[in-house]
Length: 609
Image 1 (cartoon, helix red, strand yellow):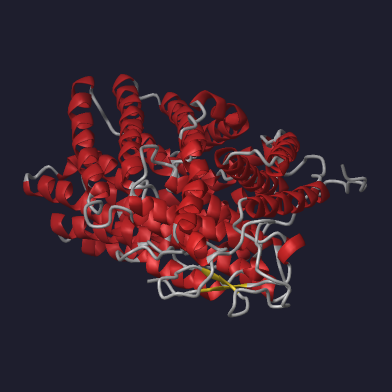
Image 2 (cartoon, helix red, strand yellow; image 1 turned 180 degrees about the horizontal axis):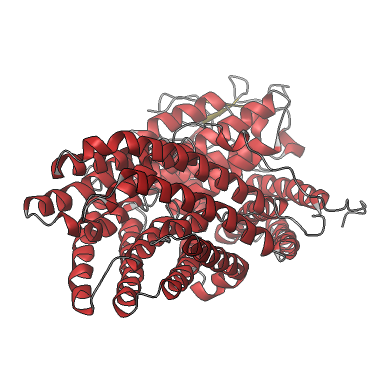
């Protein structure tokens, strides 16, 4: 435990310009953009042909589910999309039934706030990923203020379900062409992150940011590969070997070859053959070699002339044994731990919801107050204020403030775009549908650069959807949207400040304890000569996951206000100790030479076939 004196907690400066800075687009930005257009267009055009474009908001509720799970393997994506569609239908059913039973705006706002809190908590617990709860809250909140009768509810739900089924098919459509596309992308990201970390280490400027990003990318790759719990295919096993190589680079960045890691990443992204990596210990004398090279003399001796090379205290580097049966045996051993981890049952949902209680209370309070204030200011349909408040809540207050700035700026620019687009959209039903499709594509194509940029297209999209049942004055729509945006952002942020996550500090302490225990277990297993490959791999991955969770927990807690100072020094020391233990476990598996016996040797990468 550190003996450093804690510094007192202080109010942090809230960014403004930094919150609006544009980043790099996502590698697959076009996938959700094209998917949502493909999911929205057929139902909307069909309803337009039938002269019932007023029903398009219900089909669009199901179509928007195509935005989810683009980072999941297709077997897992099928389940996630199905659950998202069911969750959307459940929220929509509650909203439609409530709207059919009462027109009391206060009651409807309360229902909407409770739904938003539940959707936020469940999406965070299950890590559904972007767009998370925002789309679900938008659908249910908007439906609360649409005039409804009990007899209409089943038909409207059937339309949403049919569109949701179509969205499921759209989401699964690429599977026959690229059955391992998500796993390939995740593996490539892990390799690139490991290469970036290795470059910083070689330059003598090893930073915590690059290291944390690399560990997070490797952890995300394992999460993607392990999302499917059935027996892995040959392709997935090859990808797992590449992720192991990324882990090796993290354990010894100075010995890694960034160019080689990046070349593997480029090869993985396509549809071609997965590059073979070989074994990091194997020699590279023959034409069939494809792994890393241990630099040695041409006669098999050590560079210092001290005799034959040894990598693990006793195993001679013999061309025959290491190049044939030895390679297969080591590759099999490396994957034993993966199979053991895949067999572990996931945590039950109820155990994941407990720590999210402050976030749920914050969401419910902020959404309800935003809706009530909007009603007090004369709004007929205050759902936009409610949705604005729901969209703000992030991991901590600082990020919540940034999202508030992004939301306000994006919506204000978006209403100007709507004012320019509205005359074109009102030329006819086809023009309206095409404008909606263009806004859907633009929102998903731009939101990866920054949330505010995507909101520029989301705002006119939401306003154009209100035009589907019938046109309304542009000035009225623009004024109402601006007021609701400002109210939702202001009231939502005040609620976030009032309901702080006071458990954040205790979670950091628990994460530190978890890392310490995982490190002790990994060190004990690594030191035991009789440890099985499965036990070593499970201990190593358990420690890696604990380190990633510690960094995420510390980052989330660092932005919270009004709490005791965090043990930053202990966090850094725990990470450093964990990284050293991870390196020891990698050496124990023989993937790296023991620094005590072969510290003079370096590795270079050979060519893949």
